[in-house]
Image (cartoon, rainbow over all chains, first blue to last red; front, side, top):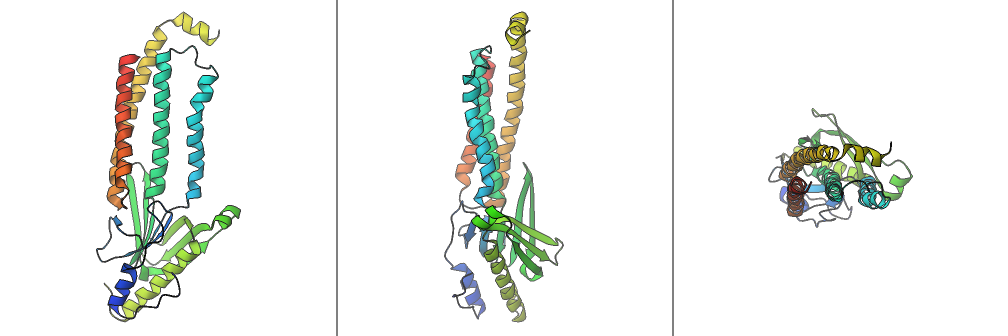
Length: 209
Length: 77
């Protein structure tokens, strides 16, 4: 959060403080602050999303390279004459099948990146995980249950691209929530700490929702 | 004995077997394509960011392509 914004003093100021901040980052961004028009299961109607995070786009590079090679593979294989003895109708169906598999692989990898998100609201932090094709797990913790927030950037590539992990220790049933390979981990940790302070201030002043 | 000699010896029988293998594989793939559609539905229901239409469209196009490929294989192989 930018330090030049003044700290809200009343409850309505606090609500407006989060509700009217400008969005930073787009729908396909790995880091999006104050996203508009986002809905997710488990959200409270009065809850405002402060951060919507995904893994840094560089984590997609591996599967993108694989997809590129899969697209090129038939050209190399068929051009090399390996399947000259195979009837043409089988080659055509096989080719279409291969590209269908390539499409499915690319789609699955994109969906995994796009929908495995980390959400920070003005009340809670969420970790939305799709572990396999039809299994979903949502972990959340209230901000006032957060005991410790640690950000880590390790390695040359992560340092150069400024992405890393944010580990959140809580006193909730889920002891630890991890935001893995997210952009600007130091900033994310700072935002969570500041929101926790705001939440504690709300509690002291009797404004807890 | 190389590949050419094997296929000449077996004749058309091997391609009948390959045809059924293709059809079985494509039928299983159809199920997988249906699961992807189901998965996209679950995901967009969990998180709605305004990008649902292109993703759902891609999933359904993939399913339609799988169905068409199955029928193509059934007819042409």
